[in-house]
Length: 170
Picture 1 (cartoon, rainbow, N blue to C red):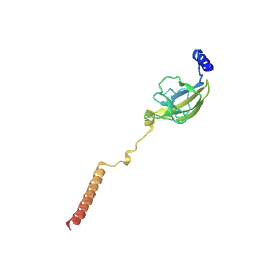
Picture 2: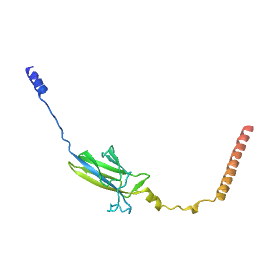
Picture 3: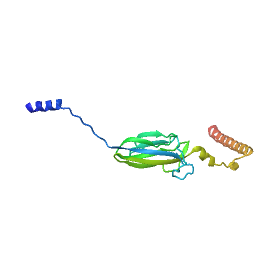
Picture 4: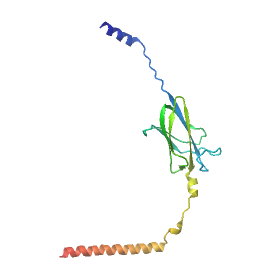
């Protein structure tokens, strides 16, 4: 009994400070407008704003996210515990990537991983699209097709009514 009391006293009065140092690192992303669509950043290519970036664990659970701005400095996801992370850049209606949109990176203790992502703005994409109007039907042709379709539907419904009426009249 005396030993239990002694252990209790030592544990009660002895300050126990447990500080766990967790090793961390960071992943920095640079998002740029890939105007020549080369898949590599050139010196004249500027930052592209509005691109969503997510950091996820390998099982897909998103732990951090960021939407890019027009600042030239990279954005860093800091204080990431050492391990593997899936970085994903999300395409939107405003831009489309010119590079692979995801990568699996390993963060080491005190390490800094960097990844570039190029995309092209949507207005640049729409400038390249041409519409071929030659396959469109004229108004007269559309009206003719609609009239023929209407007559066929009326004949089908009338024939169905005739068959049903004949069956019930008997």
